[in-house]
Length: 370
Ligand code: GLY
Image (cartoon, rainbow, N blue to C red; front, side, top):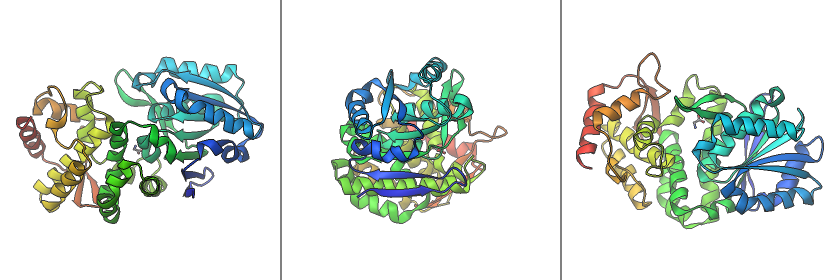
């Protein structure tokens, strides 16, 4: 059965529909949004090969004509050249102000197409059909859209909420185990940041979800999206609480920069390691019990996930360089590093008051163990 999470932002409310078979029913799901039976779809080469036919057939079954643009797969697509190409293609295809654009893909496509929709004719509606677990539980919900700049990731963009999100659990079956587990890093994050009972549930059911159990996958996505929606409602433009969603990300961004945003470390893998480090740091600062980081690391180990710097293949820079990279995180305010720390599992908070030497010694120990 399809689960629905409402995102009731005033004047821009939308639903996240989660369940099986949604892609094959996409025409019926999307039809009520349309003023005329015609949509534009943007996807990437990998996703289009697997899912585009199903989507266009589902649309055609409801009498909806579609045009499709297929971009190269990968992070480098989130750039000005592909953004320009997308916007111009939408204009060439006469997408009007009242039309709908569909983003069929993972986080890269969702972010780029959302940004294109935000600026096209000063804003057209778009539907997210996220195909990765990471996109289903994080990037497709909440309206952060954008592209990367040579100066850093996600530095150009806009808040533009989707009109609908269709998270089809069946599409997760086409992911590699590594990609699934990388997305699972973001799922664990939700339990850690605000729902201890969800973390308990993940300890029990995470392995089932990884093995393909549709019910467990549906619940994991639904609870994650509910939590994200609650936070976005409180703080859409990240003036405060939304920063909680960055638990593990200050460490993660430094590790991604240190590994050149390459296949050595996927974003969600960095988030899992970053969460483990954030909890270790919290325990060392006397904020949470030492059992909390141990429990988290044990769960990541059970899931077969990376949890320490030594799990990242290849050489890493020194602890000092990693700390400097953390200082380049875009969440730095007035030169102060902001961390999400925890008083316990399910109880995180944002702080700028973290002694530099404590972070450095943690990184030094982790580096020494590599
Ligand atoms: N991915 C973090 C956020 O949406 O705020």
